[in-house]
Image: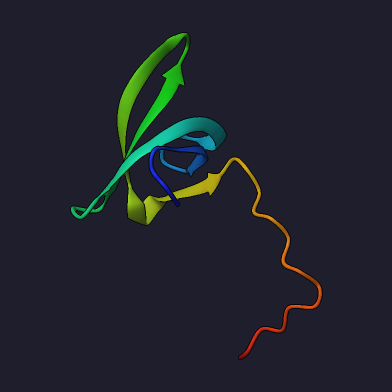
Length: 71
């Protein structure tokens, strides 16, 4: 994932279920640095990697049907 990246944020601690944000960095200290809206204000937030799921907003391109994956 190239940064910055538009993401959907899922975090049970905060009660987030797919809120939109922009992933800025992934810290080696174990957190995501994300810009997200609270009300009408944009805030820089830190989410623990262990308790947060980030999903890219844009879906990946489908693989070619004739492409064989080696397992």
